[in-house]
Image (cartoon, helix red, strand yellow):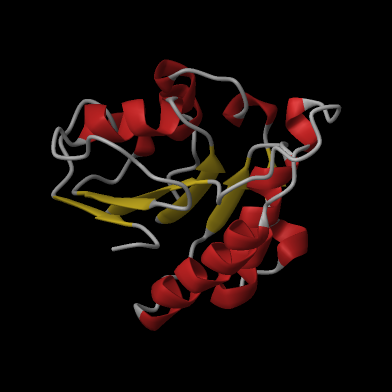
Length: 161
């Protein structure tokens, strides 16, 4: 069984229009929502084997806040440029290339590609609000099967749910 968590970054600030997109921080709501979602995951005993984040500040901060709640070492978060300004196909390529020794992987990134990929994996997921977590369980031994096999389970959680 392989479990994939797609996490859309928490609410970001647009207060400083001079900041480059990659440097936009979380706003106050985002700083509250990310640890709250991390706590929800921790209550379900979610323990990712690998946490991968987009390099954008808002995504990396979301990953760090969630990691802190899960007991995942922040220094072990992998930053991958392929999660920024990507496409659902790019994301799928990242997932399919994961080491089959890993069973639970969490990716933290952006819309619209995260919603598009989540919808491709489960037609019931139509939108991922900020800080949403889409969880997919696949009855397979290899990440390379993801996208070809349908998930055995798909669940969407988000702060206002």
